[in-house]
Length: 319
Image (cartoon, rainbow, N blue to C red; front, side, top):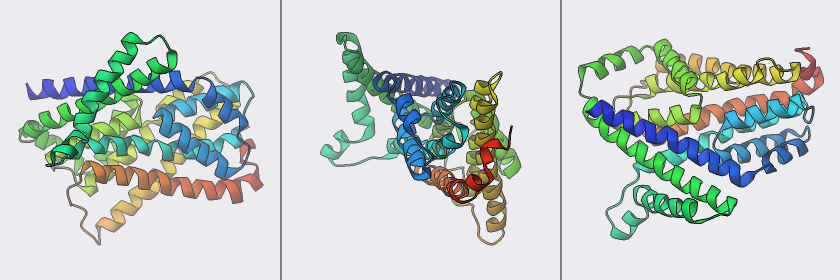
């Protein structure tokens, strides 16, 4: 029954992600596309816009697909889209921090009311009222966001509760032994995210598994790296049959995540030879690792975009 509890929690979580994303898109309307088309070749502005927009709609894949559409319509050049893609990868880390709130707890009565587990109940109730009673699209969108947030938090709690018992089973222990190999952990992260088509969702699932205290820095980091590679599948699908400009965005998205993952993977192996990375990780630790990966990779490519790629006219390399 514990595995059914985990599957049920996973269903709530994934559905909540979809509901919240729909609500955010309803509120933003065409504002996101209008903002993207106004972004110039300024690296800082592009990265900042990518971070903010992705943090708002909670989906770097949605931003990347929008960029592909804008390039198809010749409203945005590939070169000007690079900083936005970089920012989108950094902005997607916000979801992991929101999910990490589910682990907060307090003994004080007033603080208990303010914990995410309590707030998500009220948010879900108010959100449903907004959806049922309102005819205003923005209020309905707000209701979808609140309901989606409630479903996400309840899904995380259900998965975590189920994992407390599943952690002691022989099947789960055998699964963990496979993930002790960093290459297997990397592959697991790639496959999981490619199937779900959302790095934010797969990172959230990984955070729920941390309740077992079985995951360490050494085996969780390759999974996160794999998740960042696996999220490229969405842009690959979106670019199929598209123009050269859309394919350039897809290729850059892959290069960005693949380069960062290779550098981090090599660094992980080297560091582990000198310092033990077997410490158990929490959901907050996963959020830190996910943010550090995207931030460090983003800084590298931002410097390249501003000081190197512009001189070589990188936008013409794939012509």
